[in-house]
Image 1: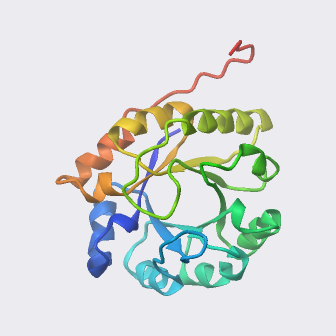
Image 2 (image 1 turned 90 degrees about the horizontal axis):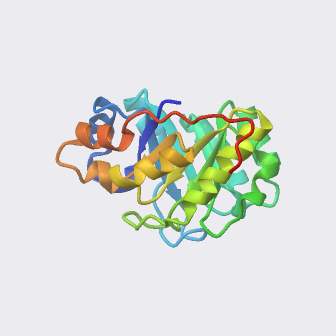
Length: 228
């Protein structure tokens, strides 16, 4: 599966967002990861649907909107109307995740479900068949520039096997501390969409940085009788 790179605008210069997005999409990024924070679910406050609407006018890239907000069900419509392609909500932030997925689909968007590092995969097991994407946070959400939590690699790998066993299609996105080094491990574990912030926006050569994070294609071997 080809790796998709989703630079996070959290690390971009907010005074020049259109240019910053053009810079990463010209450099080969397929997705633009939009970090929406409400100051309650996570400590910081970032941006709302109005900004997504403005970004939609300046890019054809997939707008990958990550809602780090309480009560995501109240926000879905405004982000869908603003032009989000994917809306990801946190399983910890709602009591009815299944219903939220259905609502996102009704609004014509792809649905992603995000998990904090401290949340077990069992929280999304029942949602994998419905969701288009599961987002494994490899840092605790709320700030850019944090260090990758190594113990999340096992979680990514377990999720990869769960999806395989269900014989369903579901992307695995990772977000937090992704750079050219950590990218190798998360791709080997089974992730195919990588969110990167400072590793892209902080680079002197953005195209090269994206290339380095994308890395070489990894082929996962499917063994029926694997004795792992």
